[in-house]
Amino acid sequence: MNISILKPIVIDFLKKVKHAFSEGLRLPYARLYLALSLALTIVFLVLTFPYEVIIRNQLQKLESVIRGSIYVGEMDFSLIGDSYIDNLQISTANNVDFNMKNVSLNISVNPYTTLLNKTLKGSILIKNFNYSSGNISISSLLNSQFELKMDQETSMPSNGFFNIDLKDISAKGINIKGFDIPPVKFTSIKGNTVITNRQVMINNLSFTGNDLRGLIKGSIQLEKFFNSSRLNLRIEIDTASKILQDYKMLLSNLIDPGSERLVINITGTLYSPNVNLPFKAAAAGSDKRVPSARDDGPDDEKNGGGKERRPDLDGKMDE
Image 1: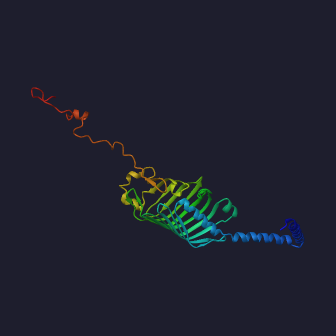
Image 2: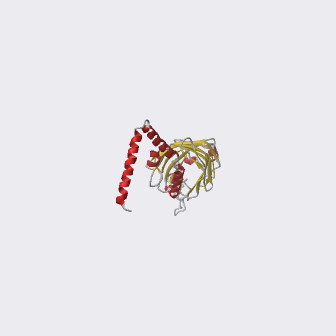
Image 3: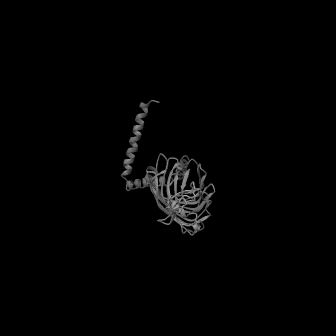
């Protein structure tokens, strides 16, 4: 086809379109109708945007971070009101499982903050939250408000905050340094965390209940691989807690005299945590050995119990 022949035809067509468009703008309310049509088009694109596909893709990217698998059940995403996920399962490489059912999400979706700035803001309610690792299992109701800026390279939160509110918690199978902890029930676990440069600062995460009361402080440094995240936590347990009454004699050396709390320090990584029980130093003088009859000392010599008395040549005992 000869382009020189086609070119004038295209130019003539574009001139006619421009002329028709100019004539149309002269009609009454034409500019208003044009603005409304553009606005409605944008609204249509926002409402019909495949957010569900994006969420599933983002969750799949996290599988490489946690070195595990993520399963998402039925999802009903809504920009107006709550979104719903019937079942969300997360399994990590070190046999840690999270099973969440009846998940309600209320995410403030803003195209700039969500898609371009990689920031999630909103709240989540999990009516059936279950955690299991080996013999340990924890179940509760979880409610949280959050604002998280995600790192583009690691897909991990780099800055922001999230609040934790757990209710009706049941925990069993916990073992600390060979001590089997009986099943424990908590009324609530509440706390606030702040994330700065991938470091999660836990200022005061308190847990209350008839069985056990106390708080958790410290930090978690998030790494590219989630299981390698470094722990620096301090758990303080109220010694008046019901579950500790039968172990008071055994735990006396672990109680901080200032706060009268049982202190447990946790370091290491999420994959291999180290539980440290800071025993108090023995009381002054308690490490001294009890003198035996064979010990020599000033008192022994004084009482004649030090050096052995031997007879002299005439058979008398040395004085």
